[in-house]
Length: 174
Image 1 (tube, helix red, strand yellow):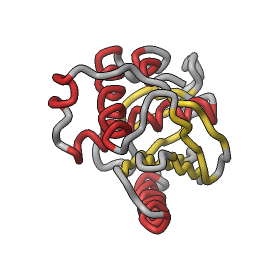
Image 2 (cartoon, one colour):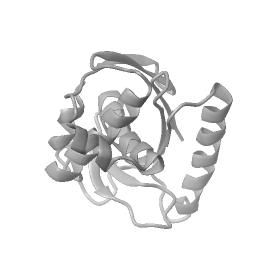
Image 3 (cartoon, rainbow, N blue to C red):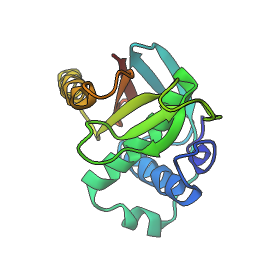
Image 4 (tube, one colour):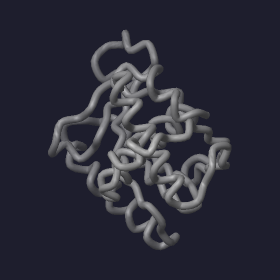
């Protein structure tokens, strides 16, 4: 699994946005002492491990992501999109609007299916370095957050919490 793969393969992630997500993820991973070729675990509903590869960043890219909170959020978007695609076969189709309780719409790579058929909601959160307790608390919080759209949408919700210290992605489906 390569972070550069974010530049293509997701109809809802442009090449430029994918490159930015990849940069943010690299900043987060390298801040924790990781190097390309690092094993990342998927835990929760799915149990799997992947080898995550990336390109070395230029100094300008490192400085572009100096805001740790923003880098963690966007880096988590990138890692989660790749991990969820590998686990479910679904890709990011579109960014969700604020207030819906989730970040992205997911669906089949060829999204020619009828409205909502085969689609899912994806809520993502990132933690630069966290404990098991912090990760599980964030997962619980994000699962509750997705309930905002339950009344109007009967689609499954997927929560992905990316922790860059291990690194790992806790994925839960409800």
